[in-house]
Length: 138
Image (cartoon, rainbow, N blue to C red; front, side, top):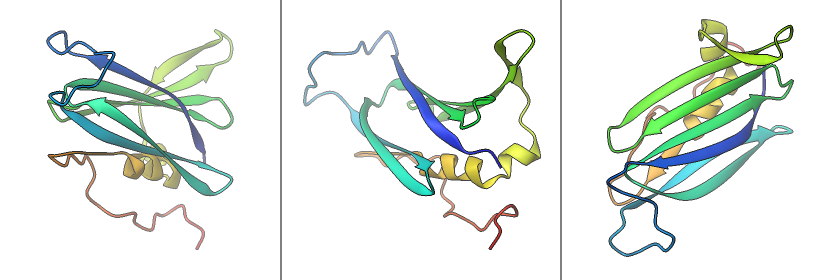
């Protein structure tokens, strides 16, 4: 089972809503909570992001052989998931289809269930609580 650590977060805003250096009371913000695991402990990170932004979150496998990319378009409530694996002979990451071994793994489920956006209008991409998964030993 792969374990993933948070690699990076990128924020892109719609041209109609450019990023502002100072936050104002008129700017619609939500709190982004994302998590990762280190040594079996969940770590959560919180960020304030504009509601009209596209948030690009990347997780790297601990063995550095794959990258999981989650892209959220907040105002459209879209979620896109990409998976990349390291190709040794070309020394680059290539886009790889997600298979059941990845999507049903405990690590993948923990990542998805740790992401939430909260604000005046609560936004949630996943509503199920953490379920016991087939790759858990207990």
